[in-house]
Length: 617
Image 1 (tube, rainbow, N blue to C red):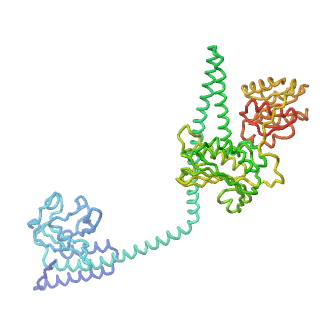
Image 2 (cartoon, rainbow, N blue to C red):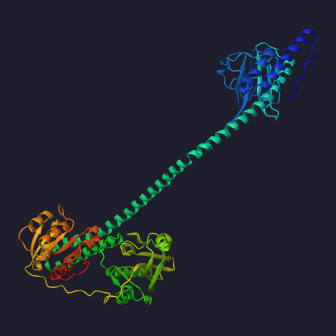
């Protein structure tokens, strides 16, 4: 960028003018050095330029870099109101303006409209319509010490030949002072911004530390909320799976019951009574399987009534040899590793038998081409920490029963859900998915636990841990033989209290077939009214969950009148079954619904005759 040096003054007037210009220049330089406000500084430079050059107006346009590139923004204006420029667009880097904004050239023209670069760029091809008239034109780039073009000073006049080489030289000096002042001001602004940002950061850090505990609590409450939502979603998914599985299996069973009974009624209407037994037997079979499904659900939920007794697992496993071999078939070899001096345990005999059978059936299904099933027993002592961490049981002595197969095994994601009810990898119709869940529920209700170890193509081991029973002597035999049903006391009187009409009718018919005189009541108060008469009863059969006065309360009132009265409670509620100890005592028994006619009749006869049997189903 070349600067034209003005000639030396020749007249006294020119000398005086130069002296005045230099005084202005020095004054501006001093003021710029002391001024640190950028906006004030730019305005001072623009005002000085108008004063030194005699321009009608002057302006400083600032180079601003944004996302779209460099634009030129009006920063200061002198000689005319700012409104004179407000309606015009910002200057663009046209052929006339580009050298100034790029810092490559000082442009001084006696008549800018005659400049070959003027009017070559749209849309205005010169100054916009209505712009202040410009003939004399002077444009000085403002360049920082680092070579950065900060912007440009522009001066204009409507007359021609107003700006001289001396004006150009003076404005270059002003622009130099301005560039230095601009740099200093920008450095100060940068330092102030840094200080401000540092103070802001320090304040933010202080506030952060002050609110850290509260925010940690809030955030913790929010992790916990998310986890609770996730747990709830998982719970709802499990409930959906459970209810869907129950509905699926019960619909199949109900279809067998309803369909068989409808066919029996149709055949009876057709006079084909000989076919009735087949359809009735089918309905009974479906109903019994429905009852079995209910019991397995209760086992999983740990709500089934248990009749625990002291058991030697080695003797029990030996007693199941024939049943297991028939169940598994000829392609599977049974191997037994039974520990010597195995401790005794206490659990429900029928449930442990069912558990072993379920585990064996699962093992058989995992070995379609045959293999080896190993049944192992051993004594295990669990340290308190190990028991709590791994098995979620109390520390101490346990008897462990393990069933191992050489089958297809399970991947980790299947192991994680193996105990879920109705979860099965078998095809539809080939399993309910309740076998392992029943084993798990039975073990937990017996204050024990289960454990699975498996790997694909290796096999599966399922272990059942049951608490050790410190018994002095094992009772004779581990399997109760079926008891013969004692003969009922014919002619005796029984009070039957049941709020469900169908159940009441069936039970009354059974009691009548047994030779009893049956008095019936549909709720507790009605039953109590019968008890308050002079009737002498041999037996009270009552549902537990009666309206108005429950079965337990009714039995207590009845025994105040007849202390030796025998009572048989009936219940379909799991909660009542769990409180079995409250319903069993001398002359008191509990039977859970659904029960078979044979089991009910046997329990009634045994109770009336003075004997006792346990947990009939």
